[in-house]
Every structure is written in C-alpha cells, then in structure tokens.
Image 1 (cartoon, rainbow, N blue to C red):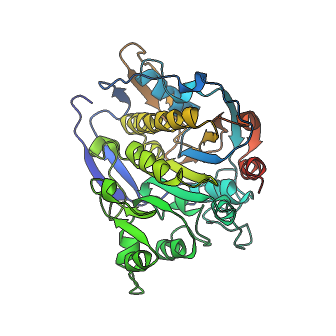
Image 2: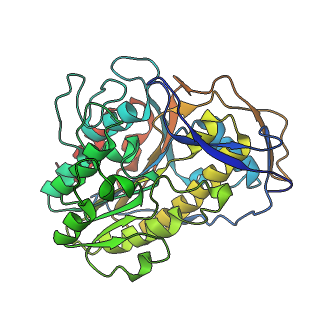
Image 3: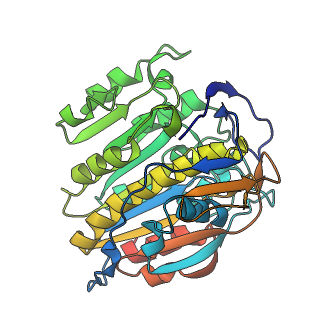
Length: 382
C-alpha cells in the first residue's frame, strides 16, 4: 500500500442485518487499492482426485465475500487467485428465517445445523432450540475438529459451529460452550471472554485441565506440542491485515491441518476469513482487497494439502455479501482496484460457492445455505 494514513477504532453497528464490533479503517482514499505485493498462484487442483470417499472436510468461509469481492482480488493479483482454480462452482442463497438479509450468526448456523434460523441466533433453530452442529456430529463419529478465524473465536461465524445461544452477543456464554465439546484445535482472538469474565471463571485454566495446550500469541503457536490446542492469540479481535496482523490465517491453518490430519478417522475444519466483511461495512476497498488476498493465500495452503492427500473435500463460500460492493475503473496490469458501495450493511444477493476434492460436484449449482449441512452429512456418512 502506498501513501495511506490509517486510523483504527472500534465502533458498534446496530441491527441484526449487520455485524457488530468490526474494526473501522479510515485513510485518504477508501475507494482505491493498489497492490505492490503480487504472488504466484500454483494450480494444485489440476491433479484429479481418484477417491470417491471423503475422509476430511475443510470448509472455508469468506465472511461478506460476494462475487465482487472475489473479482476485486483477481484484479489486484493481476487476474490470478487460488480460488480461481477451483473446478466446481455455484451459488448459495443466504436469507435467514426471519429476514431476506441475513447476519453472520444465522448464515453460519444454516451451514452448521441445516436449518435457517433467526438473525442473531447461534447454533439454534428459529425457536431457539439447540441443534447438533456438523462439527459436533463429526466429533461423535470420532473425527478430529477445528476452528480458525481472524476474529474473536466467540464471534458469530466460528461460534455457530460449536455454541448454542439465542443471541450472538452472549460472548461469555459462547466461550463456556467450548468446554462442552471435544474440539481439538481452535485459533483466533477473544481471550478476554475466557479469562476476564463476569462469573469469575478462568476458562483457560479449565481448558488446561482438560488437556489443552494454551497459546496466547502466533509466535508461540509453533511450540504447542499437545494433541489439543487452544490458541487465543489476541485479547479481542486480531488486527486487520493492513494494520500488521501479517500472515496469521495461513500459518494457523497449516498448524491446524498438521494437528488434525493425525486422526485416521478424519477431520472437520472450518476456516474463516473474517474481516473481508468488515471492509465492506466500512465501505473500504483497501480493507476488502487485502483481506481477500490473505484469505486466498490460505486457500492455496489448503489446496496444496488436499491435492496431495486425495481424501479431502474443500468447500469455499460466504455467509452473505457486505457493502453492495461494485467494481469501477480498475487496472488489471497494475493491480489497481476501484470500487463503490450501496450500503454499509449486508445485502441479500446470492454468494459464490467453490469446491474441490472427492464428491466436489455436489456443491455446484444454486442451493440454499442450509443445503450445505446435508451435503456434508451425506459425504461423511453421518
């Protein structure tokens, strides 16, 4: 990035159709991104997968990632992304049970339980009845499980796979729900909800008593040797990529895969590129594109593993689109993206879905967001 001044602060956003507690970035020109860090894309998916049985699922969610966000990344990296190499594609319809425009809680819950629920709900149906998530069902089958996110791990999307609460803002209750599962690895922010709680509980100590290695920074993640790892690498949300977060998502994903792949019964791993959404809320093109490219480099790490493994289904999608983002006068050769927005909230448009690996063809075409849960159950024989 060139000649940008960044000021960061946290502001609330009201209404279930938007996501709360995102980081807002201000700089001289929020409408334009110019890349100066291009990367080469290797086509791992050219390797055809002979296996038809699925042992592992890696589910990647680009929060707020619509087709414009994907295309902005393509322009910024001179027309090439790892996500572009995915052999199957389609769309998912994102509406929640009570609103045409979903929030991340209901959007992710549809993925995790197979039912459209009300905006703001976490791992429960529209009547607030808890339902087993795909992560919990995988655990019951003896599979290893993991969550990785560039937000607080108690935030809406990761929470929807492990917690059961009627309100996404019940962060301390969501943190306590982690102790009720056998999740093997989780990496993200939100440490404050585990150690500085109103009820006085020290969930870090309780996790340690359950056999987890506790990690509080990305630098120390490589020293975690146990089979179970709780990596809460920031007190609140990790910083945006532009503010110095660096390559958190890619190494965290690599670490999680290396831990989970040891299980002969397979694993389920959800990875969220959380802050693409926050760039949309802020109507900030540099924020969106930098997070999109960070997410794509992580996709490359996943595809590298999946192509070599041959038994891993990779599915990439979004919970919703954010910002009503459109591409305007851009430059493909220079990696310059210019854009405009129609809203500071979410929109109701369909979002893309991409897949690779055994039975990846099941994820092509137009589907409901809740259909993804049943397709996961089908391929895992749950």
